[in-house]
Image 1 (cartoon, rainbow, N blue to C red):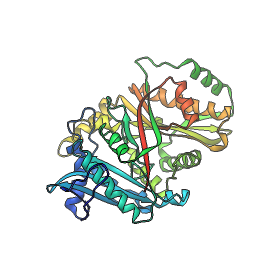
Image 2: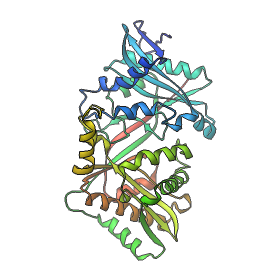
Image 3: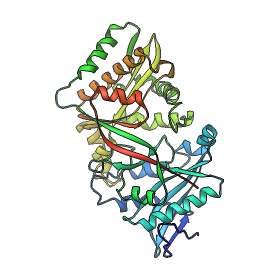
Image 4: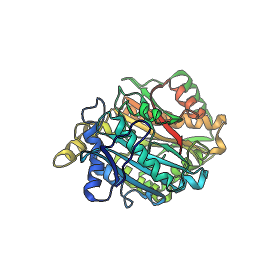
Length: 391
């Protein structure tokens, strides 16, 4: 066990130790449900999914991630958690001796606990020759990323963090500074489907160009289609800040986990001269579907889950992934192709009863995607910040 202090506060009654037992791991998983149960707009994710994220057999991304899970205790009671992370995939791409932190949660707005957790994570990373720390990433940029700093007045969508407003000022007092902001945009349809005038012009250009076409996800060839679009994604995003590609194993597991949530019109593939060039991928907001279940599907939560998903249908959806092959970046035809796939995806969701779509997250530096969401007159309603600090 290590006792941790920080420049913010020396708190001798707080200890931080690594998770070593089944009871520790259970406490690590459970802490957010205790911490945020009464926080307005927080949504309890499914507990079995949170547990699976920590297991290499369920989360193949962990194969290239060295990490430790830690718990903070005060007077013997668990009051906080954090993970310290060395992502070998990131280091191979960037060679920047940067380690990461994630899963930062405290039972209450307690800066001393947060400071002790951050100090312990920093010490763990220094011992592994890291000279910089950045985060939060839980566990990587391909999972939940960033700390919510704006937009606490609305609930988070699936695989997006929430937390409390006290974390950001605490990190800043500990010497952390902004590395990058990630934006979430909300598109509200209304009962009648409306195409913004600029989008209509792009859609007309799409319809006039015989080299352009779109098709939905082929459910009979589901795994192959998912692999194809993730290959497009890895190419499309390869020059973006912080990018780490999805591995083949991650793509396979993703396909298995998402299949029950998807329909053929959840994913639209844009073709240029017969080549798969881009895609737009939406899925229902699982947070809306599981709201009120406290993360549990037993004994009766599963029945409510199926009813909400299959019969009532979600009113909200998230657009977590979209991409265009790099060779088509900055081209008019590429932009028109993406507008065509966006429009097909949005129209299909509206027909299913969806009335709000979140496009998230989008880097503040990604001008192409920012221009595309601007065509739809989407409002930016949440900001997630990645922080960094020299060690």
